[in-house]
Image 1: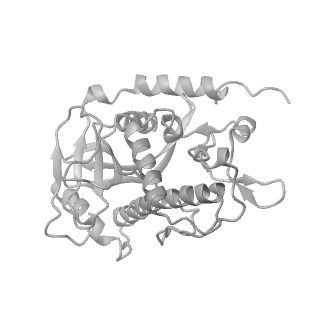
Image 2: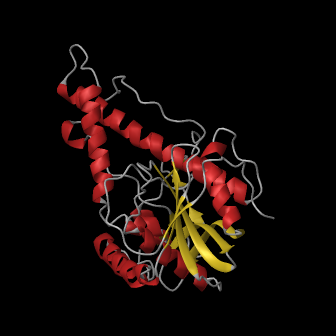
Length: 319
């Protein structure tokens, strides 16, 4: 059954042909919808409250959480038992003990994204210029509030992206999306119709026993009669020109490897950028064959294994 979304009259698809574009200063890209999250259905408000237990100045900004892990059988390992009861996120140490596979996105996090980093720094500068200094507030406390406000801006964008991804998943599996998110999907609806899209796999978790990594593909579908991979991204598109990052075709090259190892054919790979302003057209790029460089991804994975000191396919060390 063909997925349907209410159309928006101004939201026709915008196509771009294969060919590399220079990276430009971006708004934030977003990740996949996280079913573990209890707050995906609301936006995180920015806050000017003084946080409890301010961290020392040299520990204000902490690294982001790594990508998800997979068991060799292909099951996402979202949590592990915590020592004091309950559940916690798995770590590299857990991966070594359990023989877990890293995700494609976790591996590609090694690649610097200067444009995205510049956007995050810009948010920090804006927060420092717009937040009022409280009476008697220490420099450490003020700096902590700046970081918290900066993180809120980033989290708002990421959370909206997850909601859009989740709504696309609902549409592609013949469920009604949230009415609040429907206006963001209008351009995607027109593109689905234009290419005669027929979903085959939606948000499928796959692993490669040959390589030792896993990933969640957004969409595997028939597009204009060809079996194809589609990766959705959300972005604040400015002046009708989205940013297509150089690591995106590597991500699709890795997903294509996963799909092919599952016995399926992939003839084309697309990135579809959805504007985080509602009612706008989508921007579609079909990647050229030379851009879908699995060898470049494999080299990044080799560097990841070197830096982490962990090869998922190597025999586990004795206890």
